[in-house]
Image (cartoon, rainbow, N blue to C red; front, side, top):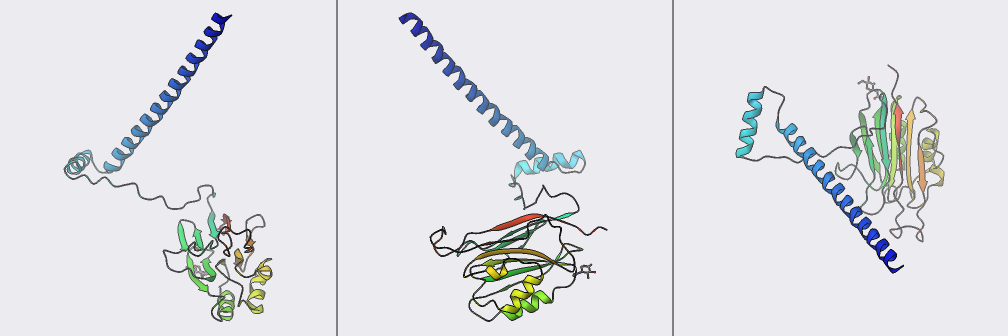
Length: 247
Ligand SMILES: *[C@@H]1O[C@H](CO)[C@@H](O)[C@H](O)[C@H]1NC(C)=O
């Protein structure tokens, strides 16, 4: 009996050892593959498209003065968006220092670093035919009377443009009826529900209809008991792919 138990114990230990070795081997294999991949990547980066002679020259000159650059930061790209569509991603402001952002195709149309984001309602106008930005503007809805200029900005958007809107901080305090009407006329179902520091994001089109299936609008109210950052609402997002104009 005792012998059989000891035997089982030994077998169990051996199994454990083998398993550990297996894990170690897998880890070694993965790190070796990563190194090989990275080496291949470096070589590919170093060798230009020119004839071999210049490639050799470049490698030699790089050998003298190492200039191994880190890979260029990958910019945002929605790989899942099919061809003939525009990729969009709107993020409302989240907290005091978490600003609103708009990614459109490979560009950041509005964000902190481009310096065109502000408290209130942020809007980007995009030419639907070309996918290029026409204008960006933010309208403070707490400090000053910006509801009318914003209404004019929205009404002045040319036909065949996309309007992308989102709040940072408060977008409601001095938002007036005319502005709400203008936004509602563009298909908003939530603008009348906006409250102090609600997060709100909205995508719409002027002069044509967007397909029904895509994410258009979201709202999230600031509720102190629920917010992670006291009286700041949570960041909310919408994203998707807008079919381009058939050419
Ligand atoms: C979009 O760009 C095209 C080409 O430049 C131009 O003809 C058209 O008027 C623009 N449309 C809008 C809405 O800006």
